[in-house]
Length: 67
Length: 226
Image (cartoon, rainbow over all chains, first blue to last red; front, side):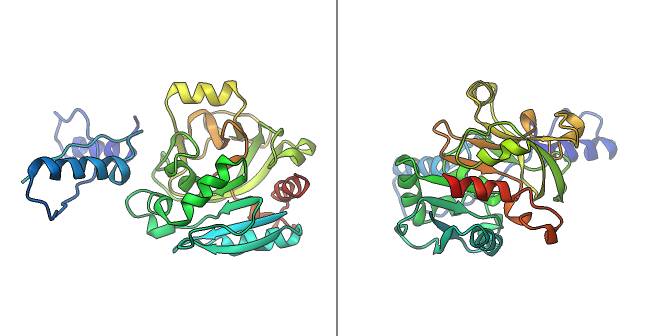
């Protein structure tokens, strides 16, 4: 999958002298506050909204971290 | 023929579409995105613009608007839907058309006229292009780089579901005539029933010689006949 922005960032880093850069992909990061104390339930809700709205699963993956 | 133009916050081509429909005597009504049902309509048009400021992904927030549920019902009943530019992006996010529209390969907003080859004239939107199959229309987008996996692309090619491909003046379809990096030079696609068309170029912007061309007219003439 071509990621034009990631490619430009990767090339710029190489130009800056970071010779060991192999590849860069750019993504998004969401901080979500939930009114839910049950961790399993919270994870389920975030799974659902990740699939339904936050990512386009044709081109994007997601990972969830609960804190 | 009755048509509905769906207006989202940030739509900016709805009036151009209305002018084009009026010129070809197609009745139209503007429908605000917060409505929950469409008026009696044969054709739904999702116009260009920057719905919701392109937040999250282009067309994504608009695809969750209340009116979209009825637009999907209209689609299932075989009603016509035309998505232009941001409208195409909304159709993709609604899952009414396959694939995805990525940022232009060279990361620049493109605003210029391009040449297109009309690949499929056997659908409600394109019958009148049988008179002329290399046409010129404007594009104005930042995310028009059509991408889909090989299986989807093969299906589009095999079932003649590609309506338009970017080409040069002579009709050559190649890398040099591809403005935004789209797979297979795709500029517009149809769903399998051919009642939904999504396209990045703007037919409504070239409907009169005073606007420097009228190749877009053939689409509205086709719709009027259908």
